[in-house]
Length: 96
Ligand SMILES: [Zn+2]
Image 1 (cartoon, rainbow, N blue to C red):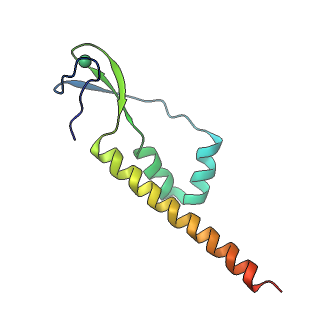
Image 2 (image 1 turned 90 degrees about the vertical axis):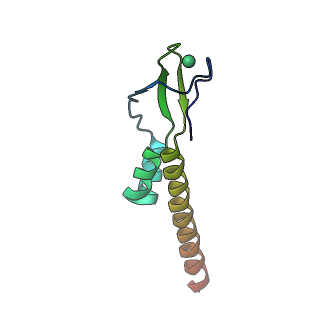
């Protein structure tokens, strides 16, 4: 997947910017539910922050890797969600 500047549409030179890691309560809950793997995939699946070397425009975009990790993250959390539903269902069914 090519990265293209949304402002000047060049796709050659970009600077990958560091993003400060924002920790939120939602992420804590997701991290606890999905475990370390889900949390790691989630962090790697975030959009990258880039600066165009031509017009200095700063923008966010997904790279191929971030899309793959985001898909893996969704998969992990889907499995966790199904697991929780199954656990609740079995607890409900087995209760007198
Ligand atoms: Zn540009």
